[in-house]
Image (cartoon, rainbow, N blue to C red; front, top):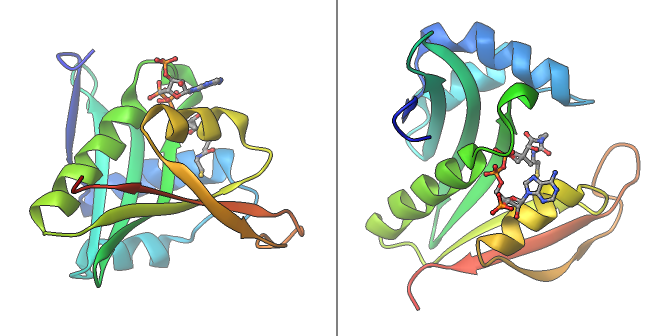
Length: 151
Ligand SMILES: CC(C)(COP(=O)(O)OP(=O)(O)OC[C@H]1O[C@@H](n2cnc3c(N)ncnc32)[C@H](O)[C@@H]1OP(=O)(O)O)[C@@H](O)C(=O)NCCC(=O)NCCS
């Protein structure tokens, strides 16, 4: 898998494809401006995975390094490329960047109904710390999860 794909920081040239993936998956997608901002914010790490043979981006994740923790605030993998451990790769890279920055933990929020994502996070050692009631615009609750990086 790793030989067919390349994981790297996102660049301006990736934004059209990232927006295409984002709007295909998310009910309230991020805008171009939001992604542009992630390219330049010093606390943000915006990563993409591209297929080497086509240079097409097939997944991306955004992490914010804030205080003593890293938050993952966006993660999408193209539906044609799911089940290949691409999300796991992106998250592990985020964990590694956070670890190297001396941060203590990686946190995230996930919809209660998002079973693939919940399995993914549990698989990577995340534990649920609580529920954020009605966190999403449609009123759905979120699980608040974390994994410790320095144990
Ligand atoms: C959730 C998502 C990012 C997973 O991406 P992916 O690249 O297919 O995930 P991976 O292949 O890295 O999966 C790693 C682990 O996650 C779990 N997992 C992933 N998809 C799953 C599914 N459909 N059902 C059950 N478990 C699943 C498994 O434990 C898997 O490990 P395994 O392959 O050893 O069984 C992808 O489905 C997606 O983009 N969904 C839409 C956007 C989204 O929900 N983002 C997360 C918002 S919080």
